[in-house]
Image 1 (cartoon, one colour):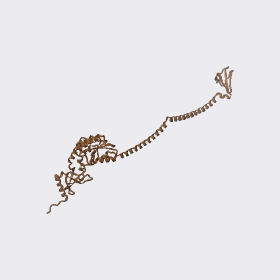
Image 2: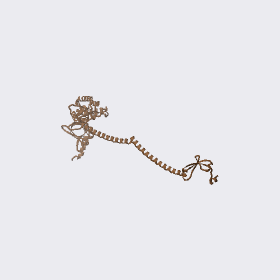
Image 3: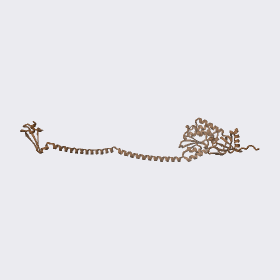
Image 4: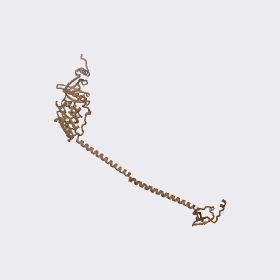
Amino acid sequence: MAGSIYTVAQVNSYIKNMFTQDFALNQISIQGEVSNCKYHPTGHIYFTLKDERSALACVMFAGNARSLNFRLAEGQQVVARGSVNVYERDGKYQLYASEINRAGVGDLYRRFEEMKLRLEEMGMFDSCYKQKIPRYGMRIGIVTASSGAAIQDIMQISRRRNPYVQLFLQPVLVQGEQAPESIAAGIARMDSLGMDCMIVGRGGGSMEDLWAFNEEVVARAVFACETPVISAVGHETDVTITDYVADLRAPTPSAAAELAVFDYRQFIERLQECDQRMIRRLEAALQRNIARSKELALRLKLQHPGRKLDQQKLRSADLRTALDTLMDQKVQRMRHRLELQAEKMSGLSPLSRLTGGYAYVSRDGSTVRRIGDLKDGDRIVVRMKDGTAEARILSKELTDEDRGKL
């Protein structure tokens, strides 16, 4: 009788369980050459490890891939550490990598991390020590190999951006046992020449090739440098201790030249733009000042003492005219009133009655009002219309009315 029948999923699950229980497969390191390497948009890395006889599918998930300090690429010899397990859906087993190092440089990576941690604890990476790269540097020092691609790239970029910038090369060894001391000495010599900034670096290579820039002697030389330093070691994915100590890291030597050498054409365009802006502002300020001057001149003219004096003269003349008019009017009124009073007085004056046959009698300058005021023999003056006459009282006679009063 035939044995039990299983589904595909059951078989794959059983095999997966066997892989899971195998201690050796749960934590294994495998060395091989990278092929079919693909970076997924999610951040996962899919690749194959192979040797001359076989191949193994591998995957590194995004969480672990972020800790990878180099870019995985075709043909690299690496050591991948992780676990071998079965992907049940496809029934295929593969390596789930948690860590990848280039073959033969595992010790270098550990040394790199130890050096990085030690120098960081010493404060050599602290931002407070970072200097600003001069915006318009004219003397650029370069510490690199005299025959490498780095110096050629820097010179080409510099000529294109600004032919007036001076480049000073300090040739050094960038690879080998003598390289760290050579680089450190080159940095110190270039620092003594009074450069505006300095580029320290080399072209790309393996971790072993770039290792000189991970040595402490080079890091200390960069840290002690008074000249602002741009680190330009390898390619964009390469990271060295010098990058952390330098004032600025450039992904490549060409990028370092872009950062150190200002673009002359853009500089001239900016100067012209500033010149035009300044002219416009000066013209606007001049127009404002002219308008302001005219306004002040008008105000001065209006407030000038001579103008005020002329106004006061006109006002004084107006007041005098008004006063003369008032005086004339008042004189006329008084004259009219006087004439009326004179008419009245004239009507009441004794002299005005003399024309009717009346006479004015006085004695010793006093008016004689009553007959009783006279005595026989008194001399009197009789004033008539056309003259006066003197008389003597010979006799007097009272009227009947006056007798009755006696």
